Image (cartoon, rainbow, N blue to C red; front, top):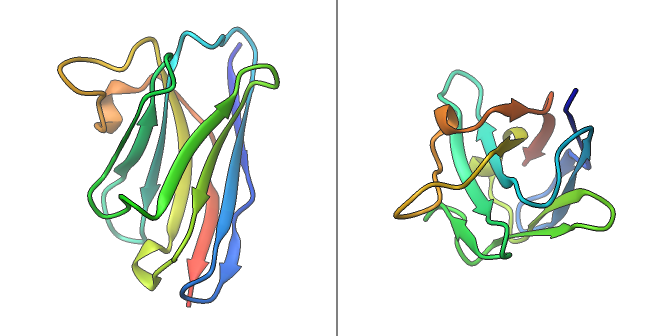
Length: 125
């Protein structure tokens, strides 16, 4: 069984920072493509960014330059460092895993990903 468990969400003022974590439990090694998604109230879930097995990353234009994805393979933890937060970043944030990231670019489509966490809420005021 595979489990993804997010943590680190909370409330922050605009311009502030938060770091989200996603612990991966079960048969999910470092060869999986990992992604972060978010879903504002009443809106579709959208891709925030991905990190491939070689550590390369891809970000949505809306977060580029402000958010950073990283992972600690030894601890099986995925991170999302969010800086310069804006009210429009408020959403439920999810981590997700896929067997590979896809071509020609790592997928930011939610339908690409197989496993999902339960989400952690981020509120920016």
